[in-house]
Structure formats: structure tokens, C-alpha cells
Length: 629
Image (cartoon, rainbow, N blue to C red; front, side, top):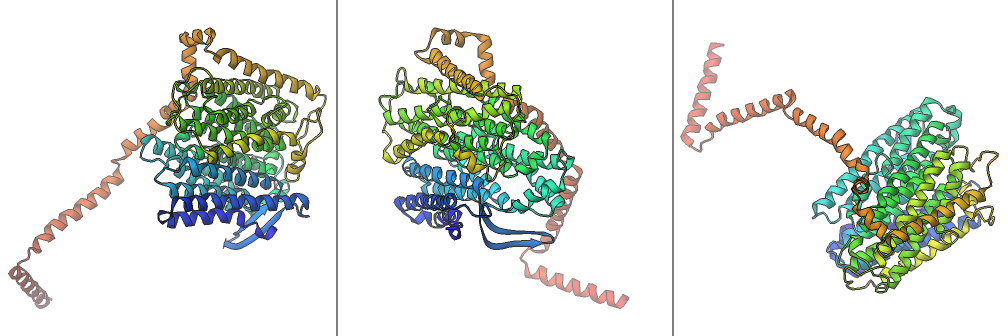
């Protein structure tokens, strides 16, 4: 099956080419068949190749396939070549499988949109770019996929570009992520300068020989790569683009948050783990950024009223957990949380999209309510997704993956009580806003009358995702409950095991604390929002708490801070510089040419006599010059 590896990214690319060039001439059924069918075929091939990989692991630890030689200049050369090892296998399966479900859902969700072909063409290219990113065996090809997902996010966030807020959100996402991308490409330049290669296996093999632990050069390279991951994965301080990215259609949000763009930073750090392990400072910075982000984003999610913005801040928070795990060296825990998060976050966004569509494009959760009886399938699947997000103990996949991160935040060599405390507070906050979301949307009085209920094309993917939001947690149980660690054993083929501190309290103590905190968060949400309690009413009337709520609602006012510190000074300087000396010089040259043009144009008046006279004068002038010389 190794020889068919190229088909995994090639089929989505083929779908993009067909739809972009011939989409206007195809029927909607054919567009749906090409758009969704190409991703489904890619997912089937990916699962078959992955099954073969797991049954008979290759001796080298990876499947590789060189398609063609790309370029060679001086000492730098790059191939269009693919690699599937244990780490990329996990990402490939998630991207294709969840991508296929999202595409099937989109067939019905986008059915009435006039740009049906453009939507599926962009979605296909998005999946192709992400697959290129995770399957590349060299950093040049990875960077091509990296920029590809940035382009596709721009196209899809601003898909409904007629609305100004939508294209502004697309521009914002594109510009902010370019900051991280610029840092990343500088990091790649430094890597090539120091190691003479951008071939990933060679980098991982040579790094420990070339760099000493904690050296300034490796720390700088790791921090530059981390900056690229921060931009793509919307972590502090570049997190402000993701909530606004909800301007795109709901399937786009599901794809961005569950299987593509925001997970790219997690993959980059995990893939380049050797470089980060050589830099304790970079590891600490990664852990601190993750812990701070998960807490800050969780606080903002508590007070949002737009159902998709709640989920967007939730994604920022959950990616923060992954960065925290990566920063303390809990590699398998970070990838396991990515794995479980992909299922329940795709489920939540798709279910939210069904609610929005049924309620005539209403986004405000406080204009919903009472939907559990009118939309039972959506209610049950959404509840399962929210329970997984809240880490409902011993039932949902989110519990098992988040529990690992909480444990390692304390027990890993890079762990610290402060990191554990922030992660634990984040667990409480997540359980609280998950409960709030369910109660406000599905309980209470119905405020908006539902329209046409979603069909099977939209509900079947939800049921499948709901099943996996529970089932996938069982492949990685905590060791003191039941020694089932299939996921860790797989991922550790490509990533190192987590090293723990000695003399720690039993793991079950931390698990019990995590269970209590999650249940307490659920109970707090129930007390405050079930039936609009008197305590909640007093809270809403408190001026001090309302100011805090407004601060959190505005995302801790990071946008306003950046506007004051960066945007306004930049616009002021460019306004001054608009009429600088260089501009005046070029303006003077242009004006001189216009003046000469007006003078010479006098000779072009259309009179034959004038032209003959001019020719005679010229002849006489030339003869006179010859006589004088």
C-alpha cells in the first residue's frame, strides 16, 4: 500500500482542480460528488494504508515516497516527497476522516449557496494543503503546506465576502498569522545555515550533535519555530484572529478548529521535538504560553453570547492544553488530546451550525432556548460533545486526554504547580461554560421558532462524531485504573516518552481532584443557568461584575491594546511618510513629463500645412548646421 501514499493528498487536489476550472458548468449533485467524494476516497485510502502500517510496521519506522525532484540551488535541494510515520499517521487519519464527515455535512448545509463549487474547491484545497503539511519529509514542502492552509483559511473565512465584517475577519486572520510565518521562515534559514539541510529526519539526527543543550542558537531557532506555531494555532499573543474567523460558514469553522489550521502549530512543535528538547527555555516558554492561553481564552468563553464564538474561544483554550503538554515534555498526551479534541470539537461546530441554520441564522444563544424537544438528535449529539469538552469523568474521551495533561503538568520534569493550577482552573471554567451553553440553548423558554429541521446528510455525521467523542477515550486509560495505552505506544514510535519527577503523590490523587473540579464546574453552571437563578440575576445587576464581564467579553481587550500600541502608531507614521522626499522627487518627474507632453502635443493638431511647415523648418535647420560646421 505504500506506493499509493501519494493518493491521499492528490485526490483532494484533483477535486480542487476540477471544481475550480469546471465548477460553473457542473450540476450541484456533480459538484457535491466531486467535492465530498474526493475527500471520502482519500480518507478510505488513508485508513487502509494506516491499517497496513499498524499491522506490519516498516523497519525504518515510516513509509516514504519520493514523487519527483523539486529544485536544487547551491547546497539546498528539496523533493516533493511524502512520509508517514506514527505521528503523521494520527494527523492524516484525523484530517481525512473528519474532513470527509464535514464535507458530507456541507453537501446539505451549503446546498442553496450560489457559490457551491467555489466552496467545495476551497475546502478540497484546504484539506490538500494540510495533508501536504503533515506528510512532508522536508521543511520546504512543509512550509508550502503551511502557507497553503493560511491561504485557504483566508478564502473560506471571507467566503461570504459581500459582508464587510467577513472580509475584514479574513484579512485579520491572514495578516496576524503572517507574523508567525515570518518568524518561522527565519528559523528555517537559521536551521539550514547551521545544519546544511532541511530534510526532517536529518535535522532530528544532527541536532543533538551540532547543538549543545541550552545553546543560544538552538534556543533562538526553537523560539522562532514556536512563533510560527503560535500564529497558526492562535495562542498568546496572536490569538485574536480566531474568534473573528467565525465569519465563515459553520463547516469551515469545524474544519479549521478540528482538523486543519489551528492544529498545525501542535504538529510543528511535536515534529521538531528534538530541537525543543535541546532548549529548556523554549520548552518553558511553550508551557507558559499554553497555560496562560487556556486560562485567558476560557474566561472569555464564559461570557460570550455568540454560539460559535464560545466554541472558538474554547478551541483556543484546548489548543492551550496541547501547548502546555508539549512544553512539559508530555508529547503523547498533547497528541492524544489533539486526537480526542478533533472529534468533539467538529461535533460541536457542526451541531451549532445545524442550530443556527434551523433558527434562521440566529447566533445569539440567549435568543434560542427550549430546543431539546424540537431538535432531539441535535440536542443529544451536542450534549455528548459538550460533555466531552467538559471532561465528564469516565464517560467521554475529553476526560481521558485532559486528565493526562493535568497529571503531567505537575509530574513531568518540566511540570510546575503553577502550570497545574492554571490547567485545573481551566478545567473548571470549561465545564462551567459547557454546561451554560447546553442549558441556555436547549432548556428554558423557546425564543426563536425553528424552521426546517436538518436532514440525514447533516445528522448522520453528527451521530458518528458523537460515537467517537465517547469511544476514542477508551484506547488510553489512566494507568492506575486500567493499563490500556495503545495510543501512547503508537505515538512513542515517533516521539520520546515523558520523563517524570520522583517522589510524587499517587496519580489517582490528581485524577480525583480533576474529577471533583470538573463536576464542580458542571454543578456551578447548573445552579446559575438552570431556570435563570436569582444569584445570576443579582450577578447581572452588579456594576463591578458587569465591567469584568465586558472586559472578558472583549477578549481581555487585546484588540484594543494592539490597536493602540501598533495599528494607530503605524498609520500615523505612514500618514507622515506619505509625502516624503522620495515621493516628491517622483512626483516632480511625473509632472515634468506631463508638462513636456502638453508642449509637444501642440505640434499634433491635425493640419497638413502645419506638418509640412514643420518638416521644412527641420530641413532648413539641419542644412544650416551643416554649413556652419
